[in-house]
Length: 452
Ligand code: PLP
Image (cartoon, rainbow, N blue to C red; front, top):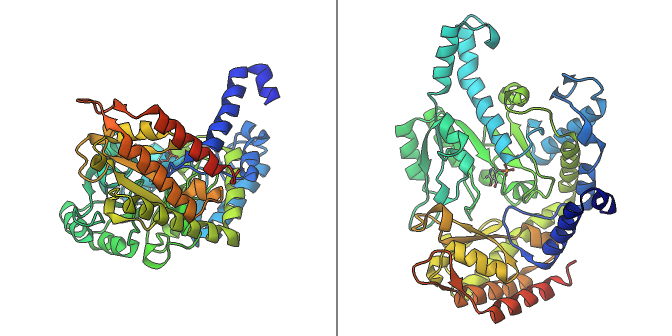
C-alpha cells in the first residue's frame, strides 16, 4: 500500500477502507465471495503488461509462451473440474462470456451454413448483397430466457441489454403458486415461438433447475441450449448439483463467471461441446480484444483450488447455510420466495414488512448487513425499487460461518426489517431507530470476530 500511496494516496486509502468494510460487515451479496490470497496474488503481476490476442499457440503477438502456459493450465483445470469437452477461459466477465456464446451459436447456426451457400467463401470476401443477406439472417433469430423478475439475468434477452437487441426475445417465468419454473408453460411457449436459443440459468432464482427437461424442450423445437451457470458454478464444481441439475452434460454450451460461488478472480469462461469449440475460440477477435493474462493465471489457481476435496465440502456448506438462513427467516415470520432454497441464495419478499427492496437494502446496510434489492416474481415495485432482498451465503461460508451463525443473522435481519417503516408516499425514504441499526451493526461485527 505504501507504494500505491506514494503515487495516489486516495486509492491506497480506498483499498484499505474496502478491506475494513469487507471484514466488518456481513457480506450477504449472493454474487460475491472472498478469493484466496493465491488467487489475488496471481492477478497482481507482470502478466498484466502482456498482449496475447489469439488462442493458445496461435497468437497475433510474439513472446506469448508464458501466456500460453497459464491459459492452457486454466483450460485444463476447467475441463477436468466440470467434465467439459472444451473450455475457453479468455472472457473478461460474465457478460463477455455470454456474448462469446451467443456469437458462437450464431456462427454455427447462421454464418456457417450461409458461407457454405455462398460457395465456401470467407466472410471478408462476401459481396455487399451477400453480406446484407447474412446480416439480415443474424438479425432474424429468436431467444428465450428467464424473465428478469423471475430471476433471469439482463444478458438473457432483457431489452436494454445487447442480447435483447440482437435477438427477438420471449421470456419464460415461474408458476405463481410454487415460485418454481413452469416447465410445461416453457415447452408450450417454445413450441409456439420457435427460438434458436433457449437460455437456462439465473441470478436470483432460489431453486435447482432441471436441465435435462430444458434440453428435451430445446431438442423438440430445434434450439441450441445454453446455460449461464454464473451464480451456481461453485455448486456444480462441488458436485452439489448432479444428474439432471448439472448443466454440463445437458447443454450445448455453458457460460459462467469465475468470481461468484466458484471463488476465483473477476472473469468469465465458456465450456462447450466439441462441435461448438472452433466457434467459441473465435471469441477474440469476435467480441474480445487481448486476453487478461494475469486474470487467466488467477482463474487457473482458483480452478486448481476448486478441484481439491475441501471445495466439495465448501459447496455443501454453502447450501446448508442458505437453507438455515431461509429457515431462520421463515420461523421469525418472513416470506421467502418459493418457500425456501435449494442453492446458495434466498429471496425475501419485503413487501410483507410494508417496505420496498430499496428501503430494506439501505436499512440493512445502515445496520452492517450488506445485501442487494432484487425484483421478485410479478414485482409491483419494478426493477428499481423492487419488493425483494436477495441474500447469498458463498462469502460468509468462505469465512467459516455455519448454520448456527445463519440463525443469528436471520434474527438480526428480521429485527431490522420488522422495525423499518416506510415514510408516507415514498419508496426510498424510511425510518429506522438509529439505536437499532447501531446495535445490530455491533452484533454483526461481534458475530464475525471469530472468523477473521
Ligand atoms: N450471468 C449471470 C447469471 C449473472 O448473475 C451475472 C452477474 O451478475 C452475469 C452473467 C454477468 O457477470 P459480469 O458482471 O461478470 O459481467
